[in-house]
Image: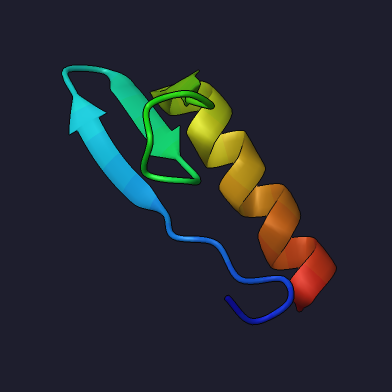
Length: 48
């Protein structure tokens, strides 16, 4: 794989956003909608 590259699966189940950055189910990040919105806003500020 190229450097810095990772597969990513995103799912939405009811009020949770689930990120699986390696598509293996071993390293899963679960955010509620408020946390996902806050993360989106911060990344938008950082990336311009």
